[in-house]
Image (cartoon, rainbow, N blue to C red; front, top):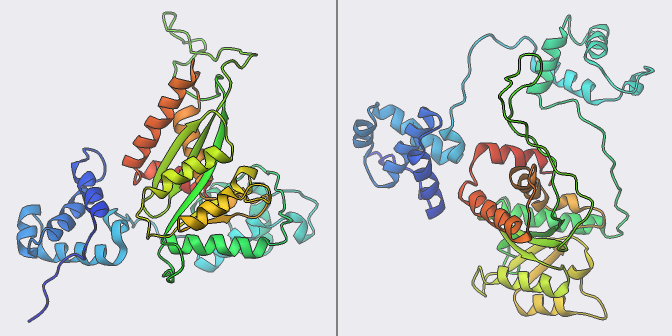
Amino acid sequence: MAERVRVREIDDDEGRRLLRIIRRGTGSVVTWRRAQMVLLSAQSMPVARVAEVTFTSADRVRDAIHNFNTNGFDSLYPKYAGGRPKTFTLPERREIKKLAKSKPTEHDLPLFTWSLAKLADFLVAEAVVDDISHEGLRILLREEGVSFQRLKTWKTSRDPDYAAEKARVEHLYAIADREVIPEDDEPEVVFCLDEFGPLNLMPRPGKLWAECGGRHKDPDREPRRRRRATYNRYDGVRHLFAAYDLAKDKLYGHIKPIKRRTQFLEFCRYLRTLYPAHVRIAIVCDNFSPHLTTNKCRRVGDWAAENNLEIAYTPTNCSWLNRIEAQFTALRYFTLDGTDHAAHKEQGSMIRRYIIWRNRRADDRRLRALVDRANVA
C-alpha cells in the first residue's frame, strides 16, 4: 500500500508563519490557498479532505505538499511565467552582464564608465549580439541584477589574521544557516552584535507624501512639513546595543547612555539568558575596544569562558562582515529617517516598538528585500 502524502514535520515558528499568511487579508490568493493546504495537512487531514475544504483537486493538493517539503516557504509564492520568449540566449546574457561590469579601459577604450549607448554599440561591434536597443539593454541588466551605482570608498583590511578570522566568521554563518552540522565543541546558536549610534536629538533627513506645487497647486493646501534647523545638541547622546539571532531571525536591543565594557557585558549576559547554559553560543562582533580582552582587563574573555560562550571577532576594518549592519539599515529607513524627536525617551520608545514590529513581521517581503540589498556577508 502506497504511503499517504503528508507534509513534513513543521516546528512552532513555521506553524505560526503559516497561520499569519492565512489570517492576513492582503497578498496573493495563490499563496493563501497553498498555505492553507499545507497547514491542513500538518493537522493530519487527509489529501481528499483537504481538497474538499479548499475546493480544488487532490492532485493539486499533493503537488503543493510535495513542493513545500522540497522548497519550504518559497514554494508558497507563485512564480508567474509566460509571454514572449527571451530575446537573448543564456550565454549572450552572461556575456552582456560580464561586459557591463567590466571597465571600458580593459578594452582599450578612453572611457571611465559605460553609458547605455556606448555599451550597446560595443556589444554590436564585438558581435556579442546582432542588435540591442537602449531600453532592452536597461531591462536586461535589471533582470540580471546589475544597476548603475555610485562609487564608494573601500578601506582594505591589513589585519595579519584576516584569512583565519574571516573564515571563522563565515563558518559560524554556515552553522547558523544549517549548511554545516556543528561538532560537539562548536556553537549551536550565533548572534551578531554591534552598537548603533550615537543617537542624537536632531532632525533627520527623510521623505514624505505631500501635495504637488507649481502653477496648478491648490491655494488652500497645507504647507509641506519642513525640518527645523538646529545647531545645538542638548541632553547628550544614547547608544543602541543590538544583537541579531541568525537562527530565530530576531533582533534584540538595549539603549544605554554610554558604550563601555561594563555595558557590553551587561548586554551579553542578557543574550546568554535567552538559551540554556548547556547550549554553546557564539557572538560575532567587531574590534571595538570594549569588546576585546586586554592585558589590563580580561573580564570579557573570562566571562565568555565561564559561560560556555565564544566571541568571534571580524577582521580589522571589516565591519561589513557583521550581518547586523543590514538590520541597522532597515532600522534607519523605517524608524529614524524623517523624524525629529524632542526627547531621548520618545526616540528610544520608537526604536523599541520597531524591534517588536520587525520580529513579528520577519517574513515581510519588503523588509527582506531591503535587508538583502544591504547585506554583504
